[in-house]
Length: 551
Image (cartoon, rainbow, N blue to C red; front, side, top):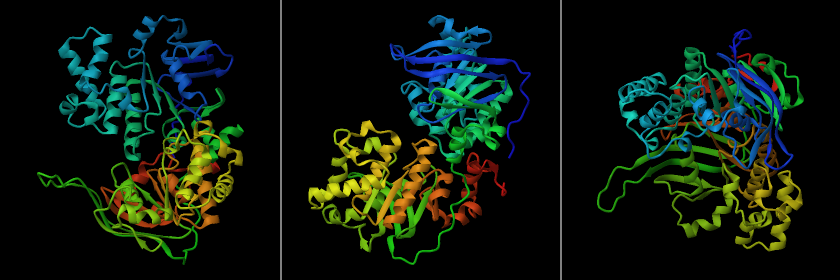
């Protein structure tokens, strides 16, 4: 694997953070505790760590965007080109932004003005910070849009944010950040919400523009795969402190700190899980000839609908995990919703535990819903915030006629099975971390002793160490209860760690399927090959601190 190993020790320091501390306003609690780091011209310095480690607070402190009344700098320096940014007035800081420092946020849709055309939003940066004429301003905007490889630039210049794809919106954000060629670019999780191929394009684009302009980049991420692709140096954060700093290759091969080793060992790789023997048990989920078309049934006019899924055929046996992978719009979540009967399939058969459910009415379906349960991506939104955990867990069994004492006893059993104490049942969702809430969501799903558990992006919102714990938990539950799992994900590395078999979807159709080891190690279809080639850190075995022999 080719790491970024250029010697930048002689390059001028663009950003120097010295003993920076940030605390909660009016309290002694430290959010950042005396952190120090340098970013040099042409360097990509990655700031990594889990949620709550202080990564984003560091970036906001540099930009002078800490929320007033909540967070305040209590000590240290942030020096940019010899000037301590902490000593500047708000008006001076406003002039620095965009001209000397720029930032790319994680979610461009929340950072872009929905009622302004994107070309005008880029032009607004130039109008605010320069005296360029309207003609020169538009020419510069079109030029920077070309540089970030947007298609049909004149059309996109006139478009609104909602008319663009996620990758195009992120390119607009990058164009806006770089239009004045700042010395420092802060990228705060800029690819987390993007598909793997779009993510690869954005990472390549940032590297290309950095090389062209010599920009210093402070890249904030929790994805060690991305770190392996883009970093020169890595700064590992935990509980508001930098616990380790090293060149990327040195850190990945020879991490010194226990926390860094734990973080790396939790990162999934593309090495598939050990091959389990084929099960001879019955098929608990069978899908045959399923098709889903959205729309097309207007009362006045019959319009062609949107074909979201077609010719879907697969089966899952008890005690095994089938993964469905693909990018946004591939149809994987549509397939899951059809199986769950959250939407009705247009054609085809869906059999769960031998019962054909695709054509049942809602009333007729109700007794059979206990056979299939779902775990969603965001447990906080799927748990009722006004209910205790006991109420959430016992609701399903009570609806099916189980006595409360028996239902509560099962809730105690299930909450312990997912690794939480029994007294958790008397608490509320907001009193738990994200990983704990996902454990609760899993406990609620298995309360019904289902035959099939559908996990729809169930770990994509979790930190890498918590993600590893939840994946292990699902494997343990499967071993104990024999449940079949349908695992929906866009992350091939996660699929490699949990799936026995894999289906790859593109444009609503299955393009490849088979054992996970075969599909992920020797993909036959061109689209599967593209997905694997775009996966960040694909050549690296993070858990064993070494490069993969197959790379």
